[in-house]
Amino acid sequence: MAVEEFRARAVEPRETNARIAVLPPRRERLAIVSTRNELCGIAAYTQALERQLADLFDVTVFDLDQYLLRARHPRVRVLGDRHIKDICRDIASFDAVSLQTEFGTLGEPAKDIARRFRWLVSAAPRLSVTFHSLHRPPRFPMGELLYSIATLKWLKTIQIVLAFSHEHRLSVGIAKVLRRTQRRKPVSVIVHNRRDHSDARHLHGFDNVFDHPLSFLSSSEAEAVLARASRGQFAQLDGLPQDAKLIGVFGFLSNYKGFEVVIRALRHLGDDHHLLIFGGVHPSEIRPRSTIHQYSATLLEEAHADASMYEEMRATPPSVGLNIDVERHLAALFGKHPRDLSDRVHFMGALDDADFLAGMAICDVVVLPYIEVGQSASGPISQAVELGCRVIASRTHTFLEFARYHPDTIEFFDIGNHLELAERIAARRPLAPPRDRLRYTVETNKAVYLATNSASADAETFFAARDTARQRQEIMR
Picture (cartoon, rainbow, N blue to C red):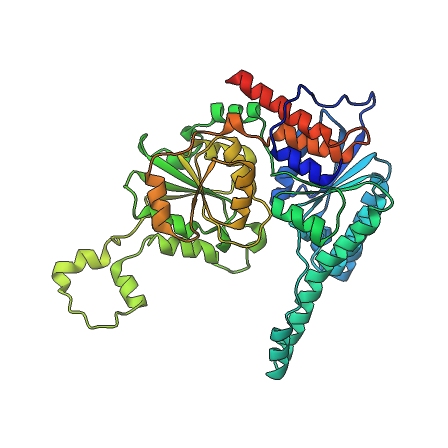
């Protein structure tokens, strides 16, 4: 079936009594090549995918050792190459290989990544590549390069050339490997949004391209999380009143997450609103002799935690003269800062997957205030929607693309606009919980992987699974 027809039919309603395709007597063996490092979002998706596909394939996950693959020491880089060759030798005997691709999991230098990717592609008998980030072909920054040469900034010149070479190898170079491979064996590409689908087909020239959002939880799994979740699971919340309204943000602490925007919004909400930050500093960002992570310090500063007006005035002296009656204003100067939100901002720490999901389930609203960084997908927003949470997200390309698969499930606010965010949080929920009406689910995700990895299935399987899921939803209603 042509990919254009597949995508058109995936959008249009279709009447059918079809069920998932009958599997062959022997379950095909599927190798999933991915990292199992719990610090990586891909690992969480791979764990969910392994669970989803267990009844369709005989699944084996090959773990990409991040210590060996990301090392820069020549001796360890050789061991990283050997590690990939060992995986290549093993996956050659499987019926199909699913390569979960985030280029950083294969190494740091682009030449290492491209070389190891080429080996894995060559070894797979039948291949599906899931691009968790799809790199567009870069445009050479000729103007920037000429300016750096004219101003004799030689280090900057070298950096410009190296950066372009890195991106070119991971976009054009990787695409060339797959285009050549698809001429001699079955190759499919899976991406997580329709923008990447268009790039994969038109910019990179891949023949068989499927798009599907990240999917983690089945309806029964989501119901189980909701049934078990309670505030009592989190000791930090014991002192909060039962009627406290909980706002949750999720993920490792990083500048692009925009959590400080939610702290600013908190000032425009009632005292019964509390912010829960589920996540901690990524271990790779723990620096020797660093007293506090920079972004953690930014969040504490934004909340005016443990600050006094006197300390703040000393740090940033006013531009005009002030006369202060010390006796009258002593308490105000040296006491708690009037904008201190430390009793309403709660750092919940880095949690395991079960507690992470439970945290979403207990929150009155899940906020994703990210800035635009060119991501292809986001795990937390997928999980929050599957749980039926109230979700408010910044208007990034990533979240807008995701909403095309799940319309009427997400409330949006402009990036960085804390006042708009506060007003949305305070307003009534305009959208009903979406769990029972999601069109793209674990079932359709399974169908995509069956269509791309099984020699006995095709794209019809996608529609069979989607329509079967829809029939279940009608019964539930």
